[in-house]
Image (tube, rainbow over all chains, first blue to last red; front, side):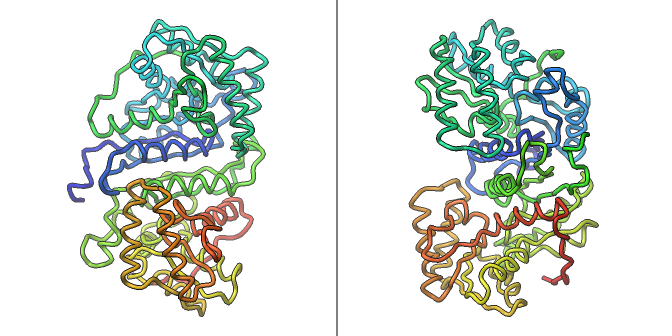
Length: 248
Length: 248
């Protein structure tokens, strides 16, 4: 290895596959977020893209098996393979963060905490709209994370949340059509009409069909933010935060 | 695990990061190539995206260290982590295929052999133009693979090959602009003018900027083809071919 390989850089481990297209999107955003002059300066990333993880929304509604044991096993595998810190390219699966953290000796960087911190920095005092899967809402992931920072969030009404879930299924089936985008846009605008100053794309499928600029207010992308944070941590430009562990 | 997790499906291991955007592209094409009704039917994929692999073009021109040992170590790691068969999302790195195969006990599926087989099936008797990196050409990877099938290939002239290499560097730096696409298009058309009936995008960076339909003749994408073949092999719809090992 020569200097360019930066052996002191941290190796990133990614729990992925939930869904697999969102993992590809995360990897692509990680490439875009990494300033390089030549290829060897990009980060080394170990990925376990495992779509077989039990359905998180079903598990969190009490209708399916927990995703925790599978995620813990994936995390252990990534650590064993040489990952120095782990992230997960799925918001809802963070409901099982405690299982993951208990299984590993390396740091786990929460996509949700990073998103909330970044929103606080970029949009202080704003009202936050959250487009999230039902399981993510049931587990209170964004509501609690923003509440710990003294902020409330705006969610979709029950009927619209159902529409959102049906839309997610279409995105997960590969439908990235303009029709899906415009429906997603309408749902985002409902949050804005309900008082949101910014909208958080709090499910990794959302940024596959909706981009910042598609709404009348800013759209915050936790996937892109996580990618940017990973570069800072891997290159030791910032220390990985030690957070008080939240029990799920 | 329930029925939907298909435990008899093979786990795919991917040697990637050469470059990292091409690996994300492969993963995205794998998702697109997998017929599913719900997320859990997608394949499990373990990825070592390692951009620190020594520059293949320099190694193959005798000006840099071999990529073989690093690739062999990555392959061993993927096998140890549970991959049932391996592929590599980089054409040129197949010059080190022998190092990889010697290091593992699971099958390695060659992107290049799969591409040549598919070209034979889809375009029998056609003259094949090859847009490949210098190292890939120096190692004779596509020339030899097509020669074993009784076919010759059309390559770029030296000056144009240099233009192609400079273009690859821009793609690897993240420049996916229309200007890069149109220059790539012109290079593809030069192969067609020299007699090619189809053009093989024989470097994983090419399909990042050029699609089938962008040229006056078909563009064959080995990345997409490999993704499609992986689905067949992982689901036991076809047996992984046992090939006579070619010594590099």
